[in-house]
Length: 136
Image 1 (tube, rainbow, N blue to C red):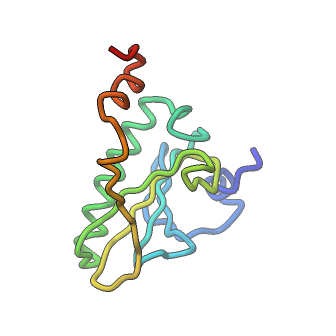
Image 2 (cartoon, rainbow, N blue to C red):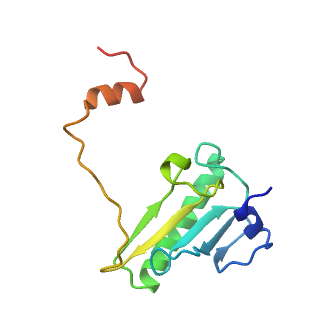
């Protein structure tokens, strides 16, 4: 596999390991969007949330929760963002499933912008499309 995360998992590329077991690897993100920004990935390659096996996903999220608590407490973060991007259109840059744990601090300059589109969308229409129902 020519995946950079697979190479990190196989120790072909060095990394700063936060946690490792037989199924999961967690490393410090080289970009450090905030202090302690960590990536958690399954050791079994899966491109995204659509492809990861359910048991691998559930196990990985158990580790994400454990690490989020540890990172928040040990780094004195004010909060934690858990982020997962799927597909290029959503900002996924490495095509190996991974979850970002982003510790948050006062004045950390990290931004997630929520925009209110409540007046732009018909929620019944959205719900029907998600559930693949015909308009009533």
